[in-house]
Structure formats: structure tokens, C-alpha cells
Length: 88
Ligand SMILES: [Zn+2]
Image 1 (tube, rainbow, N blue to C red):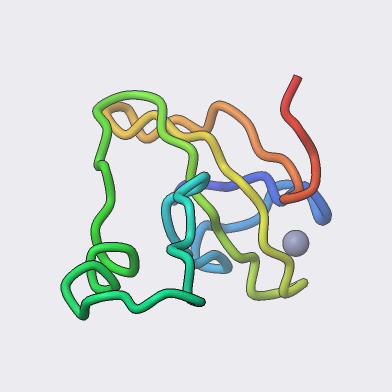
Image 2: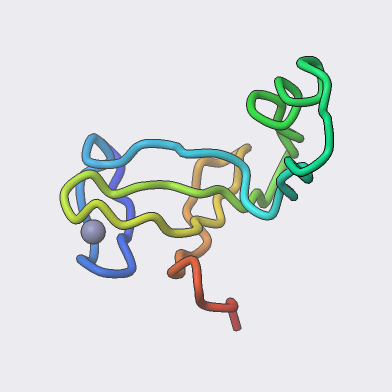
């Protein structure tokens, strides 16, 4: 079982977390018409980068969303930070 570091609670069992999406993906301008295909692309498509990937996760215990940098090849967690923080 892997443990993930919540920036608010510390190390916790991976079963307490849910993936919430790719970090840094710009939201489409919803004041303009958008096709269903483009909206679906925004909601469901990810870059699925090989290697370091920035992802939004939620810790279901504290209900906080945060960014986790994870190596998608090794599954190693490279760091976490709150959504409002800029990583060093
Ligand atoms: Zn937490």
C-alpha cells in the first residue's frame, strides 16, 4: 500500500485520496459558445505524460484539494502543495 503526503495532514493511506484531474489545464471561456466535443475534451482528456506529472488530488478526510507531482512511470510522489502555493 502506498502512502501519499497530504499538505495539510501529512502521510496518509492512498485509499483516502481521489484523483481530481490534470493540474494547470486552462478552463475554456464559458462566456462564448463551446462545442460538446471541446467541452468533453476539457473534462475528460489528459496529456498522460510519461514521467513527472502535475495532478490535482483531493484528500477525502480533510476535503482539501491540492497538487501532487507524481512520476507516472515509477508511481513515486515527487511533491505536494496546496492549490494556492507555487512550488519551490
Ligand atoms: Zn488532508
